[in-house]
Length: 187
Image 1 (cartoon, one colour):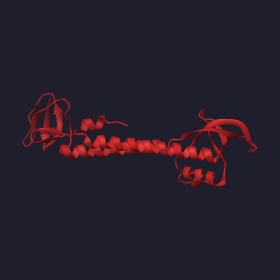
Image 2 (spheres, helix red, strand yellow):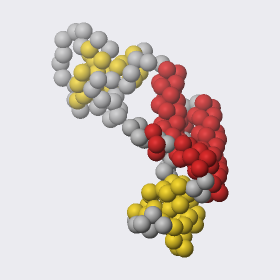
Image 3 (cartoon, rainbow, N blue to C red):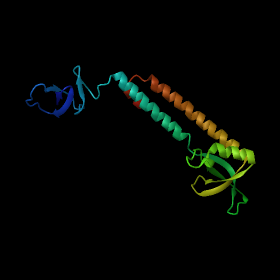
């Protein structure tokens, strides 16, 4: 394979050389070289940036990816245990159910903020909560102060665990010496 070079850029790849006018020149290359790459100091590069710059970019990108995963995990619902169901008439039944407690903040509905819901329950004693069970069926449960405390503890532990894992993963990213090492790191 040969790369046709014009002003330090690969403009064509060919199996055989053909005559070209100066300043164009042919340089032997491997199959991975592509049009648009650069030829500097007798080496092919995908970019004119230094290896250190490329490594730093890869680290920044991977760190942002890890933080995004952490943030997504921090808004996943937590599962509340054994809350009393409330029937269509608003009356508490003797049946209990596990339920999903949504932990993400709704941009246009501040009353759905999970911290506000927990605080309201702690202040007023108990309140209905419209949600779903683990099977995805719509239900209404009674949130009590005990359940609210438990949900708060679950959310806090989950978030703390995710932040710890994120920090440990970011430390691995910062210690990586090559782009390949950075790319091999995952959540």
